[in-house]
Amino acid sequence: MRRVKDNKISKWCLKGFLLFTFNLLTISPAPAQEVVDKMVATVNGGVKVELITYSDILWQLALQPDTPLSNPSSENLNLALRRLIEQRLILRRQTSYRRLPRPIRR
Image (cartoon, rainbow, N blue to C red; front, side):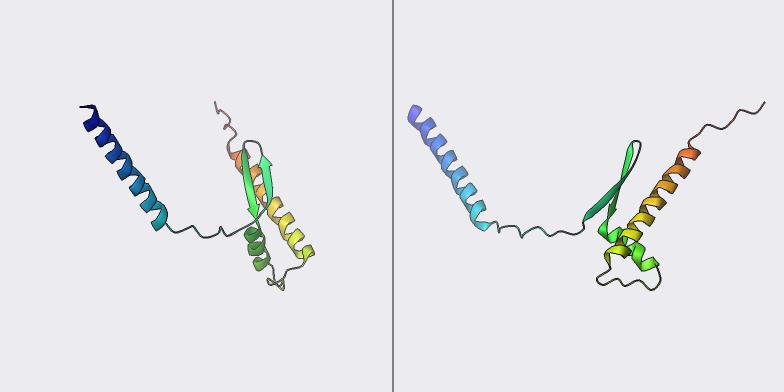
């Protein structure tokens, strides 16, 4: 009886080992990770934190006339970042005013 159990256990272990080895050999390695966007700044206003990315700044630059998008200068990037931060803060202030309770009319 003991030999039968040992035989079943060893067969089960062998099958598991073969399956594990097969998976290791057939799975191709994952390609290297690619950086899609860069985090530039965060706008914090209470509980919610908003992220400003490099692509957000490029979109802001695209909205400004006569601003080169290929190899933008540091000055243009900083101006666009300041505009984005101001826009997000204004939007946050506007939404906070909407949350105020309405006055009770009698």
